[in-house]
Structures are given as C-alpha cells and as structure tokens.
Image (tube, rainbow, N blue to C red):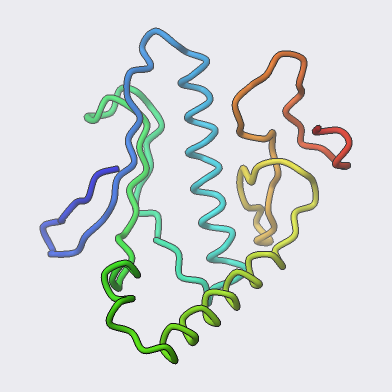
Length: 153
C-alpha cells in the first residue's frame, strides 16, 4: 500500500499488485480479489452509510496501465490511528469509542448475502451480487457461490 498526496492537497491510498507476467492464474485471482474488495466497500456504503468506508476513486485491473499492475485508489480516511491517541483518552472516552465500534460492527453483521461467497458487485437495486469465494485455491474444492454451508467446507 502506498500513501498519496494529490495536487489539490487531499490524500489517498493505493493498493498495487505487481509481478504477474509469468502467472496468469495469479493475475486473475488478484483481479477477482480487488474487484471483491471494491464491491464490498460499495456495498457497505450503500446499505450501512453510517459506517465510514474509504471512497473508491479509481481502479484499473490491467497490467498495461502506467503502474504495471492492478490497483485500487481510495480516498484516505480522516482521523488519527487509535494507537496514536488511546494513551491520552480517558476511561470514559475509551468506553464510548469501544461502544461506537461495537455499534458499527453490529451494523456490518446485519448485512446479509443471498448466497455464500464473495461480493462481486451490486445490482441496480443496491443488492449484493455474490460470486465465487476469493480465497487460495485448493485441489478438489469448488469456489461457489454456495447456498448451504456444507457445500463450502
């Protein structure tokens, strides 16, 4: 990951994948992984807008772009890392922070998917499209999507 500063003074983060020239299967896997990450951010933003997620600014999953590999560019989230401020927080402030994180986590757990797999997009109605699981492939294991847990273990 790379931190970026733009001409207008705003900041962003880029995730870039490299070195796929000799491994087309790995390149396809990273494209699926990146596409799922982008779709997941968009899903959270659409169904749980109170949860702050970085806005996707641009993606390019080709190897012919100027960076030479698939990338995702997102706006940098505001605020400060917890590790930099937690020591200065009072006990009450820490309790409030943990409660707020718990509330947002509960909102995430209320997001339901119609099948078991990885989010691969969002339809025109704002519903998740579920595709194959984006995970390391293992011989003999299918990637879904699945309708029952027993199918994916």
